[in-house]
Image (cartoon, rainbow, N blue to C red; front, side):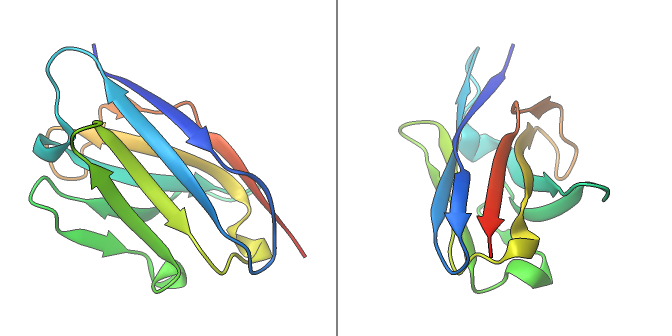
Length: 119
């Protein structure tokens, strides 16, 4: 059984930064063999893909976060990160990490982390 445990987030001022972590554990799954992503859901809105990374390391960023957010992996720690810079109030949402064995087919989800950007 794969488990994704998130940490980080919280209250940040506009223009500030924060980093989310997603530690993957269970069985023998390694994040460099999985597709992983970060999603977010703001109040009253549908969940949206923020960024994802394939097992080969190819990344996709949604337009609104390009140049501000960065996804990375620490394979030794089996942990995925989301560095969020130049935060805006519209980035306020619950952020969830996801993992799967096939590209954008996510079988496992983190518990979700609230990020609130104050204006």
